[in-house]
Image (cartoon, rainbow, N blue to C red):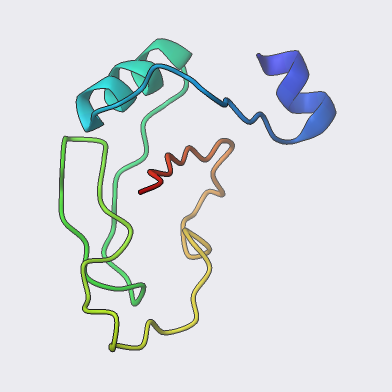
Length: 88
């Protein structure tokens, strides 16, 4: 994975058997990368699902989400960033 990530800067896993927050936590754990701690910022109201997984935003649809860049405030800069998207 490291060589693919270095060459492409991104890896997209599709149709991957991850269906719960716990499954995603297990997947992240298996990657061998260091875990990031979550720090609250201006990006909306989030709900903690596991020690590593948070929702993107729990605000009602009529609420504006302020412009932000995920983890732009983190120092030292992060090396990897993991996301999971659920489609309904």
